[in-house]
Amino acid sequence: MMTAKSLSRLEAIPVFYAETMVADSESYSPSAAKPKAVVAAWQEFGFPMTLKEPVPASLEQFELAHDEVYVEEVLTCATENGFGNRSPAVASSLPYTSGAMLAAAREALGNGLVAVAPCSGFHHAGYDHGGGYCTFNGLMVTALTLIDEGLVRRVGILDLDQHWGDGTQNIIDHLGAKDRLRHYHPRMDVRGTYDAARFLRMLPDTVRKFGDCDIVLYQAGADPHIDDPLGGWLTTKQLQTRDRLVFEGLAELGVPVAWNLAGGYQRDKTGSIRPVLQIHESTMKECVQVYATKPG
Ligand SMILES: [Zn+2]
Image (tube, rainbow, N blue to C red; front, side, top):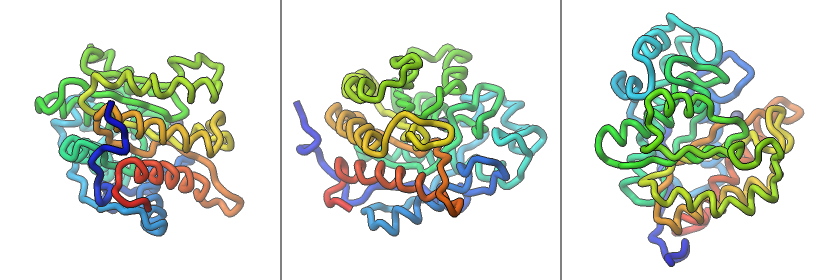
């Protein structure tokens, strides 16, 4: 069996980022402003990465996953976005966040290993509705675009955010697309017990089930952290182990991965999102360990 150590590696991890992905969402969630802070933190850390421009998602691509009236009304601020407001800044960032996810997936398919979209706010967005700080489902827009273009047969969505990806499942069910999508969230296994040791013990097997996918979209949510106000079951060390097992497992399978940030709501005493940035830093560190030629 091929091991992670014998894989080809990248000089630098491709990260799809531009200022156009960033908005002030005027809400409790820092998600819309997070790409900039995360990329700055990663740069400061000195990770080997190459910044690449996301291509904005098109109307046609949004409409593969969403109702066309909903898409049009959100983009023209005629209805509320997933943050519960009609902010033009949020609306104009949306093609770039889904676009970053799609571009990262294309890049990962191309290099056969990995790429990153440092954005959030996807998995609660359903076929014709947003909610829970999610407006459009960039995971499903990405998956369905790649399938529509004939680039892949099956896409895995490995969602290790704290919260169940109800929007993702809603779109899969609405479109009857379950043969083309493998969707996993810990809730499917732990059934309310949220036993961290058991989850981590099972994770290598969970990842191996994605061996029939041509690409995996991995939501490396920071909100399962034990101190997160909306989360609370994995320690810093356990989150690090989660990320290592995911990257090592997918590398061994030879299945490329595009990963994103998803949720994370901790703040320190000064109100900064530093605790969340540290979790995303840890995910990048594990990614670099597995996929880059030189550790950061
Ligand atoms: Zn979440």
